[in-house]
Image (cartoon, rainbow, N blue to C red):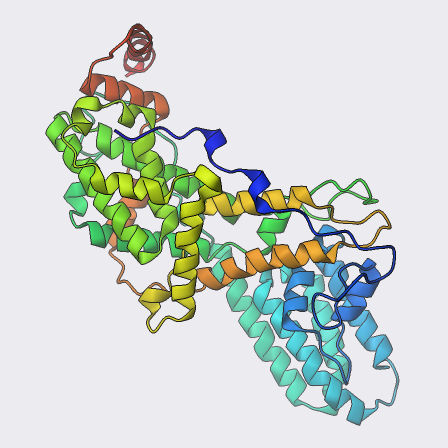
Length: 466
């Protein structure tokens, strides 16, 4: 039988290592972490470092790190306004006569910065005022080269397409997330067994990978920062944004849904031979997920099989060949802060970097653990240092973790989609926890007084209402 994982097993914060050493009161302490980028600095200095000139363009890593973390201190629309203002001021774009030679050196760099910003953080440009800033600053350099206006038009077209795609969001994929109460004989219109829809473990693992990548695609990098913002005691104001983390939260809900779907499918059949068959099927699906690099579905399946209503089915588990399951459990064992999983993840990440096919590029991390890693990084280090400077060293580490995730989520799924299977995964009704317990007790009778009392209570509260 599987062992039930407790919440406290999930993460050991101490294993994340010590926080970065705090710099001194100067604008920069020690060696810069990027070429010319300070480990700590005032917000004004960091903004200035983002602004291109005729002879300077910030490193790509700096741009991503600062745009990701700056929203903790300044609204994106205000940051864009300040960047545009600095560009106009430094390049004297408000003068009647422009230095065309200098503008022609500066213009491509400005457009490159705007392209990187709109591509990586398109949601920063949902308000009309931000588009106005873009049009204004590019309109000032356009007289020097009409290609700038054309490039701006292309940039805005790409931005609008991206926002339209993101606007569809995963809401339409949520399906029947609300668990249903247990019924002794649910009508066929309410529930069909998954094995009747898909009996091939590899095919189901592929379809789960489709669902994962589709949902991941909608999560913006900024959501990680917005989910774990600290109320910094040195900050003079509240966080600069509302909790815009809908896609991240929807993805966590998907993981929970898959856990409950697995448990529901196992507890549904009346005969233990059928239940054992479903368990062995999901073990094979989990193994295929591991081989693909889909660790999130793998962990959801293992978690579903480890739920108490499933793990208590001793007579059912006695008919299961559990050797493969124990190997998978070992890979996802929370011991040592998921040491085995982290080793497997590094292997998948390395495979992705050297991949010769899109199939080998797939890396879907165990998402809850990724979030907790970022959470503990955020908790372990202050956003600002005692002198008021931004702790940029912390945000470089944050950007490293989020940036790796962004690379993984952009992989195109190489498997052909089967709409009937993905529809079932999204919409098949799932039992609530009480419903799972009642189904479990109906399948294999309660073994002790505590279970008998709970069974009696559940039959009264749930079946009495049907």
